[in-house]
Each structure stands twice: as C-alpha cells, then as structure tokens.
Amino acid sequence: MTIKYFSIISLLSIYMICFTSCVQKAYDQKITLTIDVSNIDITIFKVGVRGNDQPMSWKQDLPMKEIIKDSIYQVDFAIHTGYKFAEFKFVVNDDFELKDQANRKLYFEDDQKTIYKAIFNSNN
Image (cartoon, rainbow, N blue to C red; front, top):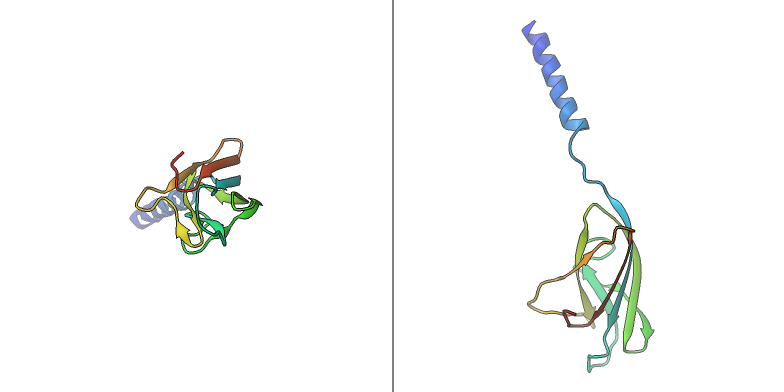
C-alpha cells in the first residue's frame, strides 16, 4: 500500500512539473528601426544595429538600408519573443554609439507593430 501510494504521489508530482509549469507567452513583433546619422562627420560605409534578441546579435550587425544618403537608415524585421522589450545599440562603421552608456530599450507595442526613431549617439 505504501509503495502504491508513493507511486501515485510521484506520478502526480511529475505531471505537475511537466504540464503545469509557468511558460511565458510569446508574441510576434514587427519592428521598424530608423536612425538619423546626419550628425556624424565621417564617411559612412555601413550602418547597423546590434542587440539581444534574434535576428539582432551583439556579435554582428543587422544591416540597415540607406533611405537618404549619409543621413537616414532603416531596418524592418520580425521577432518571436516572450519579452516586452529588447536592448540594442546602433553601429556605424563597426563603431558602437552611446559608449559607456546604457543600451537603448525598445519597448514593444501591444498591437505588435513597433516603430523606433532615433538620432545616432543621442538619448533623444
């Protein structure tokens, strides 16, 4: 009887752990990032963004498309995440913006379409 009781308790415990554990709901987000680099006085070869949520990475740029020559760059991408925000920084010619400052935070909109506009190396 004790072994049978122990087996039932063990099975119930395994069930509770496997099937009722907290799983964070994930969302699809469509994101548009736009950066104004007109305040930079260098020749621009490439502009990108790096961050903590795929397709961004801290190891390599997610390339941005030139919209206005040497001025406005943009990237559109989608992610599937359980987080409400992502951290990132813009990069020009492999040079990170906002050195020795906190990362930018991109807070996702409830309608799952997030647009973020910024000026390079500015907290505005």
